[in-house]
Length: 598
Image (cartoon, rainbow, N blue to C red; front, side, top):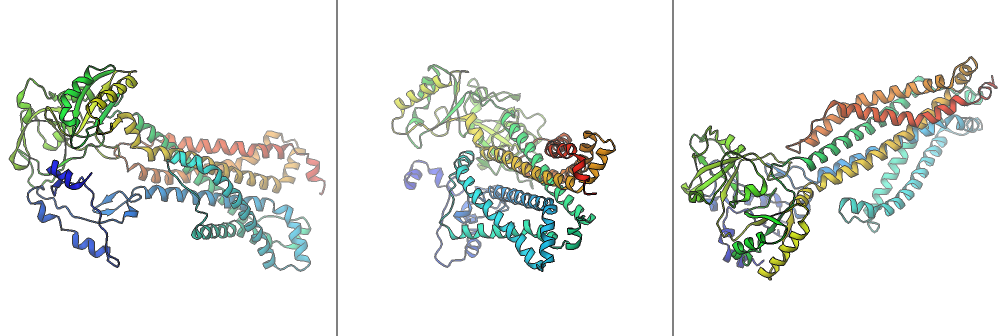
C-alpha cells in the first residue's frame, strides 16, 4: 500500500512510537555498518518526547538483510539465536552420524584383520615396507568413501523431494557451485583418513613371523580401544534416542495444551484496510449471526496468539516509582470473552448494561499480580496523558502469544461499537465449519467486493507457530533411526571380531558340555556391559543438551527419569537383537573345525 495514502487515512501510523513498519536502509559502497549503527543508535529518542514510559530508553540497530531469516532472536539489541540454532544442531548431528560410520569402518576392518593378517605377513616377508602397507589400506578407505559418496549422492537426489515436503522448503543440490564440490572433496578426504587410519596402522604393525605361525593375538590396549569406540558411538545413539523422545513429547504437549481459550471451530477475518467493510461492521456482524452454521460473532483488535501492542507508561496507586513494566493491551467487543470461552476469575466482563464500561478495563491474573491489588474491582489505573480506567473484571491467564513466551500482563479495553480496524471472530457450530465458511465468503463478497477475504482458522494458525518443532521432530526420528542402524552395524562387527578371537575357546567349551545359551550369554555379556556404560555416560550429556533446548519454551515438559531409562532399554534391546544372530551362529558352529589345527 502506498505509504503517503496509508498515513493520510490512518494518522497514528506516522507516530514515532509505532513499531509496526519495518525500515530498510541501503548503505553507500564502502560504508562501515558498525559506524552507521553507532550514529543512529540514539536517533529516535528526541522524537518520542512523552510517548515512552519512565525508565525506558529505546535504541535503534541494524541487521544485514541476508541474516534476518536465520538470526531472528535478539538479546540486548544483538542477534542471539533463531533458526540458525537448528542449522547448527543438525549439522552437529550429521557430523556425529558420520563419525559413527567411521568408527564402524574401523571396527569392521579390524574384525576382518584375521583374514588379512597372512596377506600382510607374506608381503612383509617379501620386502614390503610398512609405509606402503599404510598407503594401501588408507587408499582402500578412500576408495570406499568415494563409492559411498556416489551412492549417497544418488540417494540424496531421490530423497530430496521428500525432504522438501517434510521441511516445507525448496532445497536443490548446488551441482554448479565450485565451493560445493570443494566441500564434498574435503569431507571425503577427512572421512577416508579418519576411517582408514587406525586399521592401516594396526594391520601394518603386525609381526610377520607370529602371523604366519597363526599366533595373531590382540593386546589388551587394542581391545580396550575397540570397546571405547563402541561405547562412544552408542553414547551418541542414546543421546539421539533421548532427544527424539523429549522432542516428540514437547511437540505433543504443545499440540494438546489448554491455552485458556477455545480455538476449536474458530475463524477470524482481518478487516480490509483502511476502508471498506470496517465501516459496515455492525451490519456484517448481524448478517453473519443470521447465517447457517454460525454460533457467535464478535471483535478483537488483534489476532489470537499475536497480541503484542504495548503500554509503557502504566501507573496505579502504590506502584514502585522505580519499576519498569511493559503491559500488553487489546480491544475487544462485548461478547468476546464468552465467544473465546475465556474464564472470569473476579468481577465481570464488559456489558451493554453498564455504559461506564467505555472507561473500564479487564486485566488478566498476571497484570493483577503485577499491581498487587488485593481487591481489584473498582480500583483505577492511569494511562498516558492521565487517562484513568476502572477495573471491572479479572480473567484467568490465557495464552495470547507462542508457548515460547511466558504469559505477560494484559489489559483488555472495550472496542468501539463500530470499529474501523482489527479482526472479526466467528465461532461456528461443531461439524458445520464448511457451511459457516461458505456463508462468510458469500456475505463478504456482497459487502466488500474490493478486497479479497483474509481469513484464518485459529487451530491451523496455532499449528503454524510450531512448524519448526514439528519438522525437527520428524527429522530427529529419521536421524535417530539412521544413527542406531549404523551403530548396530558396529556392534555386529565387534561381535564378529569377538567370536573370531574366541573361536577355539568356544570350541573347547562346547566339547566339555557348554550349551548354546551358555555360549550366547558369554558373547553377549561384554556387549551388554558396553551398552549399559554408554547409557550411563549418555544420560547427563542428553539432559544438558535437551534442558538447554527446552529453555526456549516458557511452558515445557518435565524430563522424567523414565525417559533416560527407557532410552537405555531401547538401545540394549536393539543391541541384543543385533548381536544375537552372530552369537547364535558362533555357538552352533562345529567345534571340530575350530580345534582341528591344535
